[in-house]
Length: 288
Image (cartoon, rainbow, N blue to C red; front, side):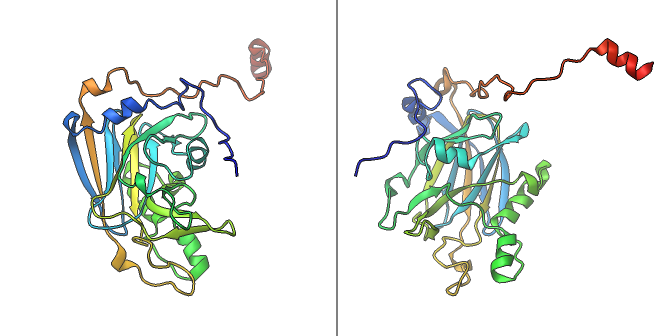
């Protein structure tokens, strides 16, 4: 069967045409300095900042663990990660040289994946792949519908608590990148999750294209080897591990020629036309 081409194709030199040589250089240990090291505890969330031009590493510190990742422009949280457009422009499971895109009307790369120790996982016998954009965060609302029980440490709630110190609320939490998570679609076109294939020390790295506020939840499902819902559901607490967060600054020479990406250059008004106002007549009408 012939391969069906992707719907969204990059022209040479466009913002979708990634400079792989540039991003490959950023992984060199000799050109970076770690400036922050944090740990996201099991079944909790954490938020932190990453300046533009820095590298962020997320790692499985003690064993397999999936995490739900959100991003915002640090100075304008209305610009935030757009999972569905990233899925269209890149792929449903991201890896090295894929980019995480922001919402309209901004539409620009927020971060670029520059390294991924799981890139060799590929596609397994069930069609599963790693670093998922197909699904979204687990949340207490769905859990209540499925189980009748309240639980306050789903990824949605963890992210809500994490971003509160930065002035954000539940309304700012959005669809996620599920890091280290292995997922796919079954023969009935239904979403499935598999046990996380990551091991201690695996990581994924992002280059911050703009100033970022990041938040990550250590999923209460741990490595997802235990069913969370349904007749086989169990307690996955024993499968939960923390996730490490590291931020690195880069030598200036590595960033020579790089600039933060600009907003999408669309200059139209969506076909709308503003009414022409005669301000002299309007002031006379208002004031007599």
